[in-house]
Image 1: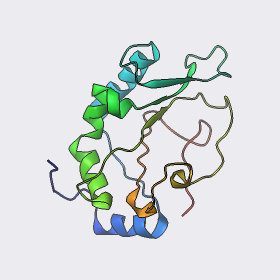
Image 2: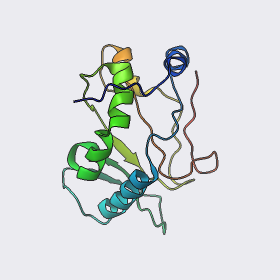
Image 3: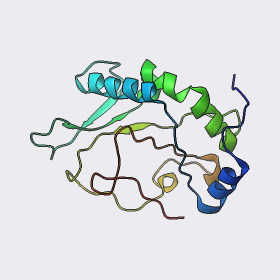
Image 4: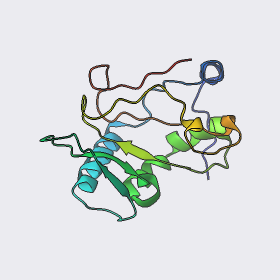
Length: 158
């Protein structure tokens, strides 16, 4: 059951409608970030549900992070399930999607900076998610480490 208290202001909702993205500070508290990062390290060591897909980064070389990404952590990992089911996340997503929504896909990216290929500008909804109504899809991107232009921050075009 969702806690129905509003998470976003009317101005934030309007900005999202106008620009197509919204930077929302504090989508995770410090304890959540610590737990998620620790869980990523454990998953990287091979712990966790075998249904979580792990993709290696072939160009990582001697990097401490030989993995590029994980798929389906919010589906099969209890730490990520706890986060995605938190009031903050669920109420924020419900603002845009209504209370009856599902997590369609989830990915944890861990590619080291300046390793491997760069991603061109793109819209996720046209990359094979096959959702007829683009307004029925919202992406949530949470940086667990400091993100800037040097290490590969997310960029948006309104």
